[in-house]
Length: 269
Image (cartoon, rainbow, N blue to C red; front, side, top):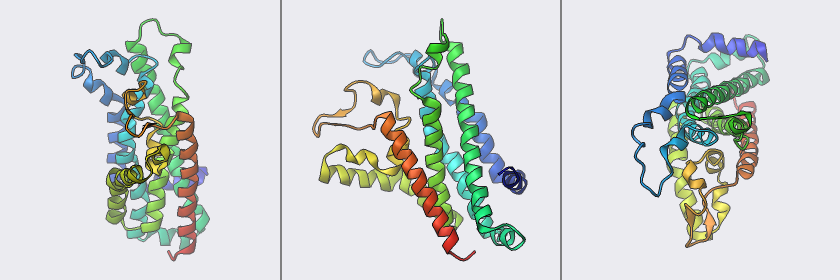
């Protein structure tokens, strides 16, 4: 594992796209939440105080929600790039010809997204703890970690998005087409399919679509308020419980990785 990760680092550490996307995520994501400090200081009476954005324990959910947007755009894009660029530059074929097995090449990409997800999770935990400690009076250990397994949920969310990008990268292989498919599915196609699903079935099974399940690890926190966004016409909640979101995320991660493996092992390089 270490050797494969070192090889990946040598291949991409000098890559401009890799550096740009990595730096954007690392330098911007932890602090985006602070940009709204003045914007949301005068919340309407029906809304919670803006302090909840930064205080324990709710800061875990708001900081996670920010990353729920940044991970698909930065790290998903990055995952697609490290796969499709190897195809377009013919380094995938070259790596396998000069000694790597197909299994090793695939595992190098899988280990890469695992490492990226671990680093993103650590950055999330560190930034959340710092922001929360600065803004919470009288915090203690129990209050800090009253987070409904937020670090685990964050890791599952990250792996969910990145494994989906991994699958599309190995299945489609063409950079721009893969990116277009990735963002079109996340932002347009699945929401449309969910609307059709609700129209015909009118039950909470619509919550179990892949990206929605992954997203529900860190939905918009106000959606978690009792009866705040319950569809009274159809009488079902629009969010999955955290345990269901994590379970479905794990299932989809396994499916995405399995499909990526199958596609790569069966096709020509």
